[in-house]
Image (cartoon, rainbow, N blue to C red; front, side, top):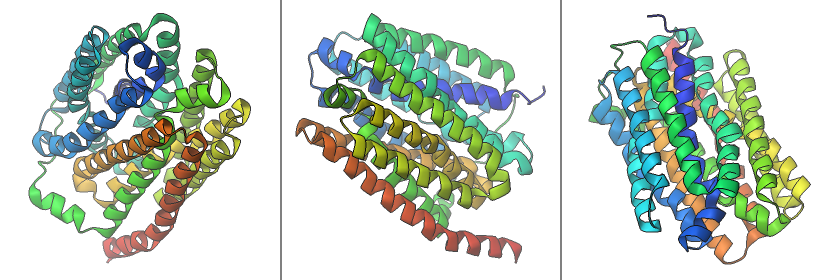
Length: 389
């Protein structure tokens, strides 16, 4: 079977994974009202879900490295469809939380194993751009999936939103089974692999960048809908437009990164888009309270959010190509650490009514991330020199 459409199937898989993981952000107001819990408690669906993803992502890389990727990835998306279906019928908050944690265990292996699969089915010279292409699925989740969830939850209820995500997951399952080549499996991940990655200073610094930039983003992103409501009196339709801008510009940024990375290299491309991320979040912080200014900030922020994460994947694969699944799973794991840290801090600030402060706290995280990106240049140069020796 030809593999030309396989990256697109993986992209669509990431789309349903991303929509499932980010979905509660678009319906916090509805979940809080219908289930009788606070906005902060509704946000814990993201915080605790991120904690589950953090634990399960590297564990799954160790346990599933030799699995047939078509059967394994397809099964994950099918189980995801069932979890979203169950969420739609959850009778209370506790049940929804329990289903959410199971869903995150199911979702955890997909993104790193999708990146690892790319490294097995495409030529080395196309690996960077193809990985960035596959991660466009996350941009599409923000551009189309999250606004869809916001609109449906606002006008038809959060249960209907979960039903729609379940239907999308079924489509993703069919595409993966249809287009991924059979009998593709990776290298088994052993304990020494984790030790080796932990001793690689470039890998460690790249993982730190992921934690910092995701922490900063999720201070705001988790509570973006209620923040827009409280600060700018935004309607559900206006909130959906802002989420759409975030995702559309995220898609544009990721496409641009896909085109640039093979020419500029991972470091330069990463530096550019983390800088863009910082500019956008600074614009949000300064303009908080004015809907137009916040929307502009979100648009610029969107250009950097998915592209900067895609560049992290590209740089990690380049740092340890033989164990791409393991290194990317670590990145995915610490990405969820960042989500958990950011959403926890954001929730703390929200309940204390420190709504403007949240923007500046988020900016501080991304400033530190940018400084670490600059520091990685020396280690990347040393790594290239060693390979050439």
